[in-house]
Length: 322
Image 1 (cartoon, rainbow, N blue to C red):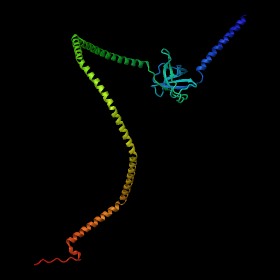
Image 2 (image 1 turned 90 degrees about the vertical axis):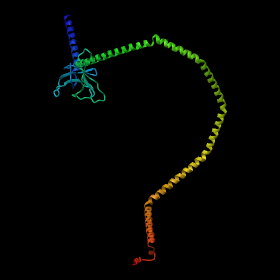
Image 3 (image 1 turned 135 degrees about the vertical axis):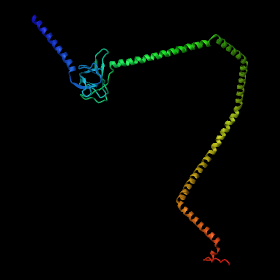
Image 4 (image 1 turned 30 degrees about the vertical axis):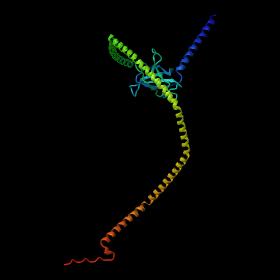
């Protein structure tokens, strides 16, 4: 009996060891499988330390393995982390410090980026985005509180002004609706009623005249009916006459257009001839001018020395008698 119990205890112990080994293997396989290293840089990394979870699109894909100031630029913090192999980090992915819930520890959250962006190689730098710190948030809240206080003061002043204006408006309204004004308004209404009563007969007479004028206008329209018909007939005959003369008129216009086209062609030809012979014409005119000048000179010479027509030499001048 004791042997069976010992065997059962041994079997239970072996099963417990196997279960623990399986759980340990699964957990280590999940976090210690094939990982790819990356790094990013932040100016402020509160809560970042080795072992901090790395989330890609809200899914845990790795852990932070190093946090230290950058050797090249000590003003920024270099964060090295590993993610599971196959995690699609790309050039549009952004790393920032986030948290799963309000009270949870910080995590390194990486956005999914874009499917069209190229994938990052192992050891590449993931672009980062600074997260507002608690101090900055407190400073901004303080600025907002100061602005809100100023706004409330301004609103209170405006409300006081509006209240004063409202009281003045009510006082003016009370003055308008006072007893003297009510009596004046009642008097105006009574005068209006009396005026309407006086004008009622005249309005009735004007209405009767308007009805009579409308009836006369109807009779005039009825009498104008045949005249309008005659006018329509005259217009129809005129349209027919115009239609009859339209054909010959269009033919004459076409002939006139053809004549004008031929005239334009003749003028163009004449202009071409004049342009071609312009230089010869100029020479001819110049020769005529020279001939005219020569004839003028000859005429003057004949007038002054008519004997030159029969004598070749000019006679000697006669001596003056002594």
